[in-house]
Length: 620
Image: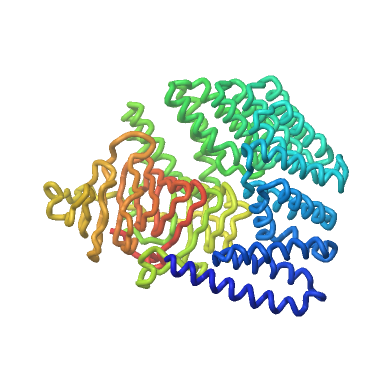
């Protein structure tokens, strides 16, 4: 590894020398390219551990920049130049050189966005001789004075630098200076659009909250909400939600409730999209603590917020939550009325209501109303007999939720090069996801395939090829076999090579009463079926973030679960069949194969791949 790194550095240096020699011949006509080549050469020498040569060449770059400032308008985008300039600024003399260069950049830059990025990165790279916070505070003050001298003290371009100065003052425990800086940033942005100004008030409220100034914090967020005039975008809504969470952690639940109530009253698609995960968490917490009055109040406000939405795909879910609450607290007529409304809505959309009846029947049974549960189940057609034919990467009865920064693609496990989980993009038709209920997108997603959903749509920002399709699609269903093959005594006949508490699973069928967290897979070809019993407690009844170094094909590792709890999967290559459960892929988690579940939740930053050999395969 070290030798390879050295070879790469030598190759980089060789190419840097070539670029430098080539641009030296044309530097009069193209000084920018010559300057960039100087920086690359300095970086190449330093990478090759020839630091003295690197420092000498970098000095040439600095001198050249000062000599031709008017012709190097794009030097503010040269990240390597600013990194080296920052790393060498360790004394007053070198600091002065940094500020000299910065002033030239300010004079030659009309649009400050790129320059601001370089300045912020420079502050991060620089190692201060004094305490980091005080050193950054002093450097920010000097940077501000330079920009003020060029652009004036009231120029809006000062805002990001003033914000950075405020953060440095706060880190240095100079709270009065930090507050003054935050207020100055707000005044500099007086002509910004309402959403930006409201966001700045939320930031100010967070600052006050961090330092126990609750009255000022309350006034700030309320000022921000009024600026919005009832129109809230998604990013501003998330800012308010984050503030509400901080109030809760600070023990000010009343103010958290006030923020949530106020924003829900504003309503709109962006508000409910941002707030729904937190609202679900709060409602579930109220259920667990028997705070039914608080739960009902919050659900009612969420339902009311739907009136200001153009497409609230979760509206029925919240009405069902309220219906379930009424049922659990003995308000049968009110519960039935809401349940019938949702049933009618689903039927009018041409979708099956069977899954709603199944969930209702299970709740009735859990509440001890066995007769009512049995009567409702009699109205549900029996499940389709026969094998399950895999048609989709993700197939959900109620909901598929795609977290921010999710990538969905496909690969071919029949190619031996792909056994180590190296997915490649294939034809768009190879990948599709389906929800008989809703598909929800919580951020930007990249998906090459087709989407089928019963209600709503994935929304803007989800790139789909060739198109999105809506409408009801039949979902093959099959009950999990009643007679499962039990594991051999002590698993002796099925396990091999047990060592260090880690056991290896050979091909076969296995019944698990607890999470299979101490097992890996042998390299033997063949199918393994894991039948999970419905037991346990906690957030996840099974956490399948296991089986390190998998080289199996997904069809050869099948996970069967008939329960209703939540299963977490991460780093898994398998087919998961859990038609009554929620299957969750955690943040940063990966998955390859296919999933059938009641709800499928991707929390964000996920990479999920469909094995194209699964298309049309029978799961049995």
